[in-house]
Length: 314
Image 1 (cartoon, helix red, strand yellow):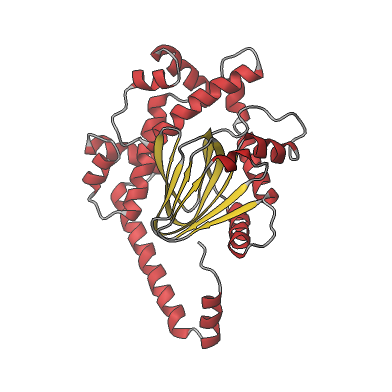
Image 2 (cartoon, helix red, strand yellow):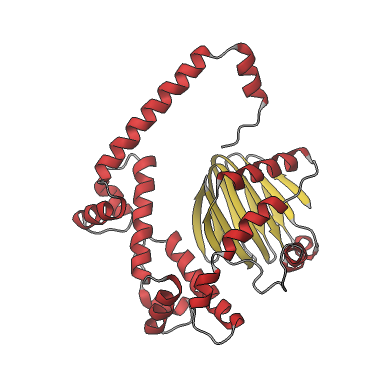
């Protein structure tokens, strides 16, 4: 593997040499404004470890937070920017590098595309492997990405059911149909707060509007509109925890035109009102602040020194 660290405010560009190597590249970004760009087609696995990362890939921008994982397909022009006191890791490689790595992990020929573009939830086990790999990259030490890749491949394998539900006579055809639908689904997730037109989404998938809705529903067992509404509600829930905006402003910022419709759908989705969830989050934050203050008051000098020696990963 090749390692690359990107520090606060620095920019690193992966050029033609990155696409020609048969080794995966492990990039670790740390600090505000650290930027990674790709000039050649590279597929990647992106994992925030602290704060947030703005990722531009697949024709859309998405903000990834701790607990998220994004797989980007093999394409050029991908850019990642650290936000705040960010810390993130990315595994990147061209088709040659990924084919060599994945062939060792699969008992069958590696299909195209090698990795399917998708957003996954990063488990604690996966983040532990990512942290270990990031530390090794920073220290230029030997480390294997295999434990992390095995978890990612297991998550990608769960997409198999959706692929089988896609129209197509052969597996290769169904996989290509799923790839087109998945690009639209990722676009919906990243731009759910916007007023999206179904005809434009259908063109993105190279379908007529009617066939697009039918294929999307067959693959994901819900309509594009139902998925869009769910993503808007998830965005609203994140804003309730992280933003000082009023609930009516959060409803508008999440793509809802009606506060009443937002309140009804939010309660149906999460079983609690937006106001109650915000108050619940505020109480939790107060308890955590008090707990941190208590630990700081009673911390011994030895404990403080030990914490300072440890890298601060989330």
